[in-house]
Length: 255
Length: 201
Image (cartoon, rainbow over all chains, first blue to last red; front, side, top):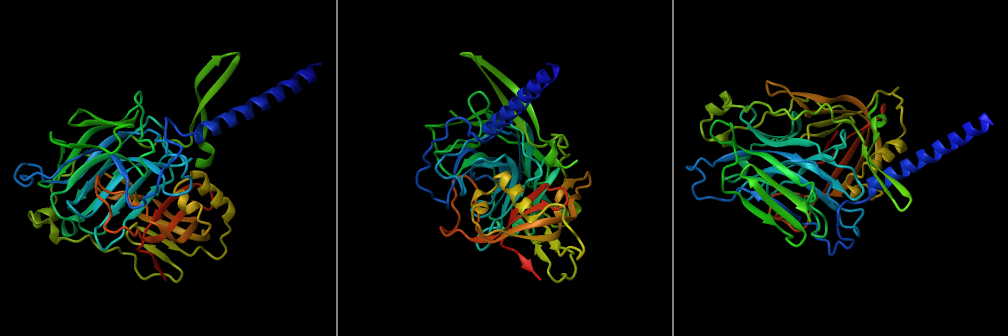
């Protein structure tokens, strides 16, 4: 009798374990929120954004707005991607960036694809005539809700840009941005997707917050809070929200 | 302990209704405890920069000091990565098939994973640029002489991100080598990268 009860208990535990494992797998692979099932036509030469950037200003050199780096603490959220493109460059991400006026860029952030976990990524681009370099950090699958500082740092010791996450370096440029890009450089902070039918990271109750927005000053290489005057962009106002709490705290999410 | 064994299941919400109970679980695939949100002190002007005055365009990043290449070596200078042939007697703990399954489980770059053109090669992997930034600004590399599977395809379309409202210079995106790196002893997925600057010796 006791033996039968023990067997039943073991069977129950096995079934429960299997059910938990199945539930976990289902939860992991199910897209969040309401990404559309139909991605629509593919255009792999462009992406769509929701975020803020520092625009061109005529007094960029004299007005204390000559920048060379960018930094933000970004909350990790899962952006669901549209359902009909499961095996191509169908992604949702969030990042900080320093960009040349009309040429290259350096960025770091987090990214996910269809059915993937969320990982750090970094991309550097010297400009016309070259190709982007991209690094994906597979050592850490990110937990939703965690916060990381993503920052692009000019280093006068190497005349290069570093692309960092907290105290971890992902990439460094082997070229000098000042010798390759056109000034003024633009700090940018955004969520990004391949298709407008996909979700930016975040929801109305759990936004993808970008806090402690900073720019690195050309003069002295120090960091300053982003001043007033950034421009917002929302490529899909029907489905996405882009907002600001202050000059140094913005957010994006999908309705 | 390998990172593969760090996955944990954390129950977060329990719903009860219509006689059914649904346990919703959240997966935390790997620990991120090693990362704090500490911020390095802002670096002030450096001697190198001050000597360049306000014209910062004159300086050049130093060349990599990697010495003469070894036969069979692959180099990716813009990533900071090198791959040397492994010792002849080295026997990996995991097979190439297991390594490929491991990177497929990440789901990173599905376009590459589904290309059917992946080849696996045992290498000794190092990356000089990826690592922990020290107080003096130097980097302590996390990946140094790791025996690994390099799972590579010679050509994959580059996934271009880039600034708000700016398209790439061309509508024809380049195709470049793409590499996944999996620790051949622990089975841990370490990195993936794409660079057109691949040097093979």
